[in-house]
View 1 (cartoon, rainbow, N blue to C red):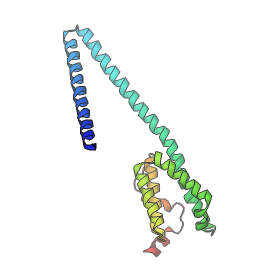
View 2: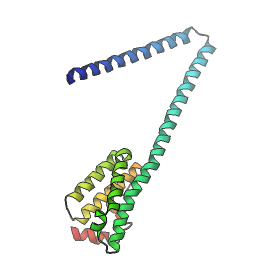
View 3: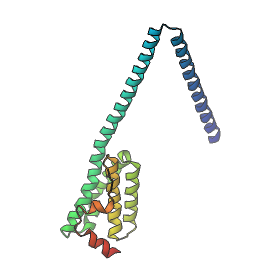
View 4: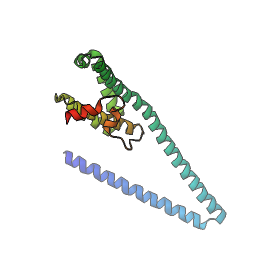
Length: 192
């Protein structure tokens, strides 16, 4: 039954596309005939009006898409900032020699993480979601490889930067960590 419904849907879509193409061709043909039989001054006015209307519609469409992107960008920054805050809270705990396990098991952390995941589902770009899933898979695997974890977090940071419109030219995941991890080079050499 699904296959019949699928074929009917595809056929209907194809017929609608053909009808729209025919209507567009017919309208262009009628417009062409109108311009040919009109006074040259009227023809020029018709063409100028069509060009002006087309440009106005194009400008409206571009401006609308830009404003939608900007509105989403602000929400994305807020969401991504919550992940960055959780990451840096873990770093501060590490500096203060506090246990990450207690923090990660806390209700506060779980609530923040669930909220982040809900928002990521709606506003996150596909590349950020994929990078986050890779990080979560690494975390769930029980792998204690600090460099792998840092690289996974760095990949998320790079994808976040790209998603909010910042350039990552010349950067890799390790460059971002070098902003706040003072012994990154020693940690990297020790793991190799």
